[in-house]
Length: 140
Image (cartoon, rainbow, N blue to C red; front, side, top):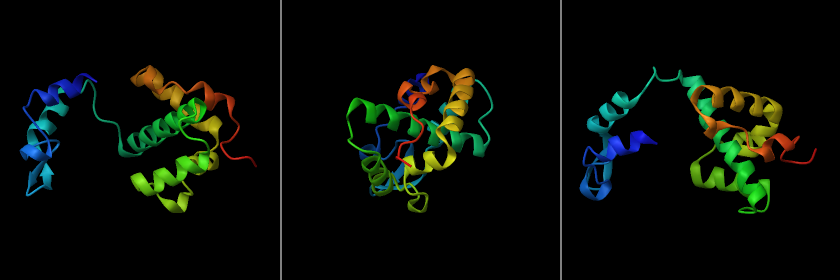
């Protein structure tokens, strides 16, 4: 994304240099880097999405990518994705994992919302063909 170039132009080097997306002291994040925050704000075309919409877009994008990696054989089962998301990213375990959550919402809804977001923010959110072909990630 073009914004990454703008962020890199601020001269950040990450945790090792004490400045990245966050400011660091002794290797620990101490707050958001104001230079990066300003670069992100300056690069935005529109107002930021409201929190519920932003959350939905991020989660649905992850579901979309999960459908792609399942079809590509990167992972073997939906259970593998769910365990990885819970253990690796902290996805809420009470939801059963990313793909169980997707099933609880209904893949038709997920695909519909992704199509909506693709129209407003770009084709990167077009529903994956594998997502459109599935009725669920888990057999009923």
